[in-house]
Image (cartoon, rainbow, N blue to C red; front, side, top):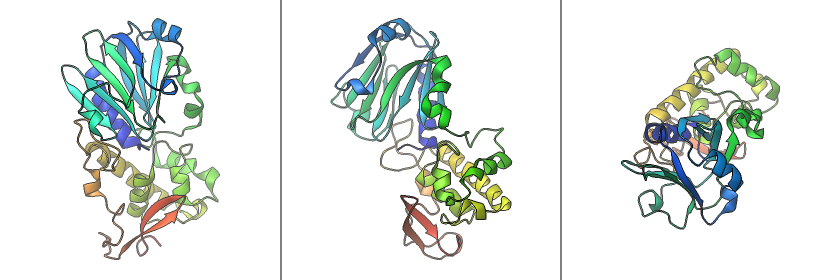
Length: 288
């Protein structure tokens, strides 16, 4: 599953390429579930519509149209978005579809623009989707109503961050951090990295984490996510940056996938355990 920095990387790439382009046609191949929209709505609200904005909420992409409808896209595990026109852009699952001839066997949705450029949604495993929704209704999608605030918003304070965890007092801190209803977009990589940075064991109960530790966790989470966006996302096998290359964040990772290596802070050996249903990387000396 992509994490917030990977989806933000995709958003920034698309924003430079498709805003102002007008949709000529939409094609759906091999998977109606990938594009569960009525043809009448597509004809009325996508065809001849201009792209006016590319946004992100948590791990979901939002492409706003001049018709006051929004194309809502979730890449899930193996989704790709590939633009072909005067420039070439590809981001998502790093297989040959990023650079090969399109459409191919993984192509689910094709959007053609008036200038003869194309945006392809490819998805090998067919878990992702592209939905057309009135822009005013986007906040009412079940996911949008449940998802927590964005951890990187400028007006999201450390005090608000701590308050988001209060209702999960009996939960371990890593499980709470991964809960999208607490804060948006945090996945396994950045949970491990930020907990290590704040010297907090993932096994600690939320109620046992002090105010000062929450402030440290808040700063560390924002640090690692901003660094990952700067580096184009992680080098995890499923995601690449806006140039079709893998991101470089994992070159700077301090604990994730560094099991059996020395902790860069204290020199103790990093271990990998199963916690909160996920592989979890910790320094048992730093994160008691």
